[in-house]
Picture 1: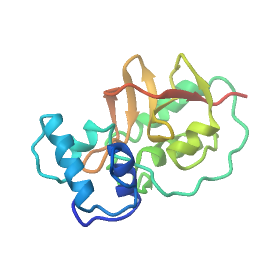
Picture 2: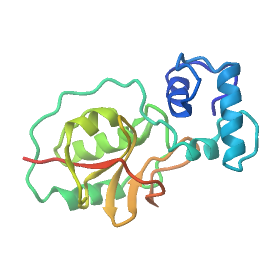
Picture 3: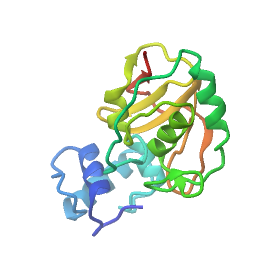
Picture 4: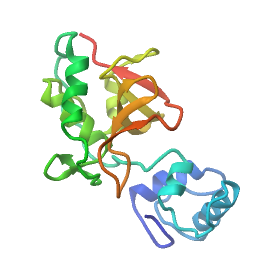
Length: 193
């Protein structure tokens, strides 16, 4: 939850998504508050000025992976990896969302989950969603195990399972889950040899 007086990278992302006359300075001040209230009014949400889960959902979802350095990518594994990615990801269903989390014991954020699952099948990808988006090969037709990106640069990522479904660590208060793809993805990424 982000509110008046909050500061930091999450506030910058909020301000970028709000657009308009809001300066992306990382300080949740009067202009940001007014813009959040206007958004909540336009979306039919309770007008609290507090950016809760419903408000984040209205602007594309919580930015789950801000400010984590990427790791150095390595060459991809063979082409049978897609189903192994899905099977591996299913082992972590129910693990709590933790911002900055990248292990089953410490919880996962969205890109922490994707990086961890890919590593378990022998693929090294960067840590944050935007870096994963740049690193993987963009594809128009996803296959199981491909990554689903939201935003450009990406602020959220999941693992494509089948048409309309992905495994993801959605946002605080939730757990890793198989869920509908609730917003229109910006694109899909695949490890290509």
